[in-house]
Image (tube, rainbow, N blue to C red; front, side, top):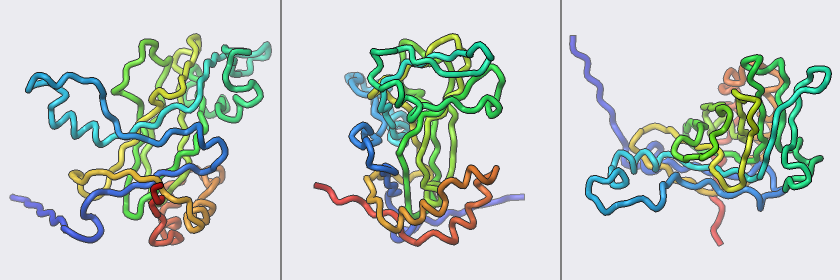
Length: 257
């Protein structure tokens, strides 16, 4: 038995040309802290030899598919338990912390112990305002910074995730599973925090990332899906309903200048 498959790529219309993805901040408060996502580029590499890895088209193609979101804060956090055994976070930086002690809980949250995947691995979440939107089916994958070296490795791993951003333009968060709570979690402003990868119809199509306007239509749609995770266990089951409510156009690139 022989099976043959044919794929037809249109030169015009939906599914043709670059995949346009918009990014925006869910709120303006403290917007100056959050750098725009940028394409993954390994800088200052040697290109003197024709066979250098920095000239390899496969490496160049791979790097062009990832976008970097940088850490907006300097944090030095430890994990501990009080005399009753209740888990809590410790601000190791103390008075030297760039973030006021009463503001740390606004950006970094220790997840309820009942929700940890493993009883000996605390989970923390860094709250972020980054959102992404597209007007065609595009899946966003959030993953760790595998191409960046840290001399002091993190004492755990981040939670990755994948979802259709065209239907679910929600603020991303950075979720961390603390494999070794005896070691501190150190985050530095400006260092890569996580990568985003975008998948659409046509794996050969390049991705164009643009800053998007937070239009009234976009905000109204986001309000309709906001907080759904607090009321259902499987938000993916809501995608069909979200698609029915979604306007045809939500991505409006922000004018430059």
